[in-house]
Length: 204
Image (cartoon, rainbow, N blue to C red):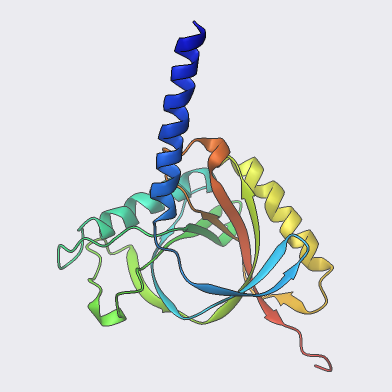
């Protein structure tokens, strides 16, 4: 029995290790860490291209629905039947959190090798491709499952930490960033809650 358990754990470790290495190879938008404030990172992201879709569903459903639409786009559901490499993270940002009108933007970054004019148009009219401006994000990383409760806990922590930062002010809505695919074990998933910030200029 001990040998069987040992072999089982060995297979698990090798499998999970292989998954982690594969995920680590997925392209992510480049950024520069300009400041670290406790658990917060202030990052400067250069202009980059994103595909996004607006989903009118509750939090728990919006991510999956948006992911399906955008995955279709990069897998070839576009006017060129072109396949585009998957990137990380998958972003989820509230457009409206009114009880009767929940809407969320789900976002994929496009690989850096593409210019805007080189990307195809989505077949699904609910998708769009646009260039995101250079901006600063305050990010708080955490590891674990994708439950809304866990996300809300870290969202509240991020906003609370920023209340005590005198050099940056919030300039957007929180974004939930998921870096791993669904087959990654929950305890190994890398996540982040981030929000756009702008520097506070003394005297203004």
